[in-house]
Length: 300
Image (cartoon, one colour):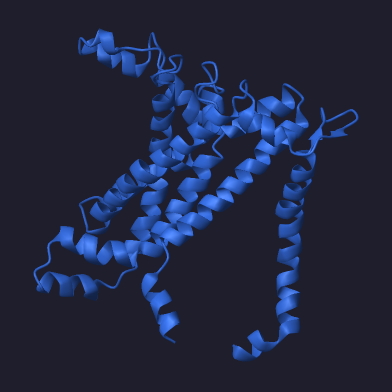
């Protein structure tokens, strides 16, 4: 193995195809988008170099929708990190510790993940329908008519109504990742904890969760990036409405480029999404850093 790793020519041969593919598919479009973001261009006709004006308009133009769209994406990220992941972890712990019908429950929780997001959006639109939707019908049956709403048409409730299907769709995904990580822990560790008199709660907090920290970092990264660039669910449910109450950067990009023909401005928003995903991912890696390993490195 060491001989193979020391052969720099072999390493270059194996890495080059993947590197070229990464450059063509990821890096080149990002660089091109950054160049377009410096232009005033409708995507067809002549373009004009305007420097950072598109970025200034994004943040400082009083008519700009972008600040509220960015704030909405941060709220999606917060809901995913602080509500979705804890629920997923709780379900994973319960299932991994052994319950009757464990495999059935695992499959049921994972089913929403394999359903198309467009289908999920249509399903929840029916649930939220003001006249025959399941939610309002249930509230009326419970004599809570004052609680009924036009859930997707009310600026006060539209974001919360959009959070619910996002949580429902991906709880099973993160649950399965964490469940697999818990199952990979040697059972001897849990048996030793039981012999020492540790309860399941203490075992979860002081043994299980610390040992699956790498998988928690992966789930948190997926949840964060997915929330910051969310598009399809919002587009199907509300298309950013009512007004711009549920607008997110991805839906704003589509409207800006393909409806208003402001290709440069839309590219600037796209660049912002890439940069924020990168920065938040770095922050997340820093928060999940292994302090013990760092201490060992400094000691050496």
